[in-house]
Length: 143
Ligand SMILES: [Zn+2]
Image (cartoon, rainbow, N blue to C red; front, side):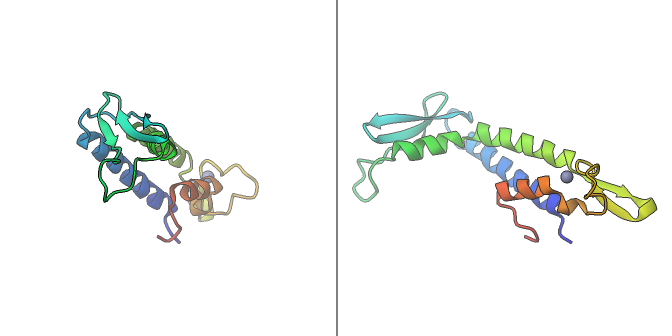
């Protein structure tokens, strides 16, 4: 039996570390990023202080032309602040779906799902909420 909760929590730790590292390394030291259009159909990503996070590269002939605004908006949508908020919410969900051990009947279920009639004899790793969370985070069972 895999420990799905541990795998999810490890993935959340990784996402938090990456987001905090991104905050530390950008000049403004903040995690709120915005896409700004530099030229029509070409954009870059800046932080809350206007410091460049993802640079427009039109002037480098060996690199691709400027970033598409759609790409810049996508990067900005997944800025460190957004990822950290996701991590907090996901950890709360994991906390709500923790093991519910019943030694009298030698079984363990899920605290969050334990009241469902068809869930009483299942392991917390069978929790449908944790399975959906794992899918959302790219965590594979047994990985
Ligand atoms: Zn559950």
